[in-house]
Image (cartoon, rainbow, N blue to C red; front, side, top):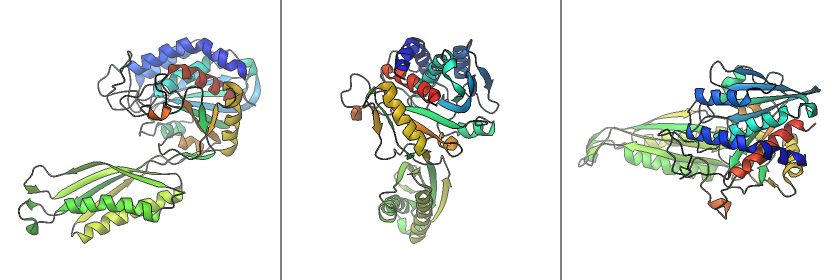
Amino acid sequence: MHDLLATASAVADGVLELRRDLHQHPELGLDNPATQQRILDALDGLPLEIRTGIGLTSVVADLDGASDGPTILLRADTDALPMSEDSGEPFCSQVDGRAHACGHDAHTAMLVGAARLLADRRSDIHGRVRFMFQPGEEGKGGAGVMLDEGVLDGVDRAFAIHITPNLPVGWAACRPGPLMASTDEMHVTVRGRGGHASMPYLCTDPVPAMATMITTIQTAVTREIDPFDPALVTVAHVEAGTTTNVIPETAFFEGTIRCVSEQTRRRIREAVERVCTQVAAAHDCTAEVDLVEGYPVTVNDAGEAARFAGICEATLGAQSFVPLPSPVMGGEDFSMLLQRVPGAMALLGVCPADIADAREAPPCHSNRMRIDEAGLRHGIALHAAMALDR
C-alpha cells in the first residue's frame, strides 16, 4: 500500500483544481446539476460504467477489476450549506448564502482522484469498485433516494471519508460501533392567551411556559439518560411576541436531538414530549410538539473499522491512525447505507497548516472553516487502499 500515497500525489493537482472550482460554485440539496456535470467531465475517458440519478443529480460509476470478487462502494457527498463564507480563501464561494463549509467539495474531489488512480490499477482490483457521488446529505436524505434507485444493488461493503479540520494532516480516525449520532428535530408551539403586557393576570403568557420547557428538557437529559449512552438536546431557535407591551398568544422554539443508540433516541423523544405537554398544562397553556425523525445513528461495522485501521497505517505510515474513544454528535445519511451493508466511515485530518492546535481550528459548518489541501492526497490514497484490499 505504501506506493499509493505517491501515486495519489501524482493526481493531486487535478484534484485540487476540481475542489477549488466546486468550492466557488456551491449547490444545495438534491439538485446539484453544475456539480454533477463537473463530476462527469472529470470522469470522462476513464473505463467506467456511469449512470445518473432520476430523483436527484447523482452520479454512480462502476469500475470492473481484472478478476471476479466483491463490490466495494466508495461514497462522496456533493451538496453545500445554506450559509455565508468568511474564510478569506482566494477561491471563496461566489454564490451568496451558499458555502462548502462541511468539506463536501473535498470529498467529491478526493473520490474523483481515487477513480483516476484505480482506473490505472485495474489489474490489481479483484471485483468491482462503485463510486457514489451523492447530493442532499445536508438534511435532505439523498442517500435514501439513491438507495431507492438501487445504489447498493450487488454491493458487499461500503466506505466513506469525512474531512475534519480538527485533526492534523496525516492523521485519520475511526472506531467500531457508533461513530455519529442520530439527527432528530423538535418543533414546539406553546399556546396561551394574548393581551396587554401590563395586565398578565388577564392573559395566559406562553413565554414563561416556554422558558421552563427549555430548561426542564436539559434536566431530563441529565437526570433520565445514562451518561455512557448520551443524548444531546440543543434549542437553536426561539421566537415569541412582536413588541414590548404585548403578551403573545403563542411562543415557538425548535432544535435538534442527538443520540448514539436507538434506545436512548426513543427515551429522549418521549421525555421531550412529556416535558413540553405537562409543563404547558402546569402554566395553563397547551403545547403542540412535532418531533421529526432524521438520520439514524452512523454505526461502523467492527470488521470494516479494523480493516481501515490496518490500511491507514500501511498507507499513511505508522501512528497515522487515531482510534476515536467516543462518537461525535454530528450526523450523516451514510448511516442509511451502513444499516444495509457492512462498512465504515473515517475522519480525515485537514487542519490548516497555520493553526498549531487542531482543536482551535474552525470546525465544519463554521463560516470560517478552512482546510489544508495537502490532506486531499491522503484521502485519495485511503479510498484506493480500501478498494484494493482483499
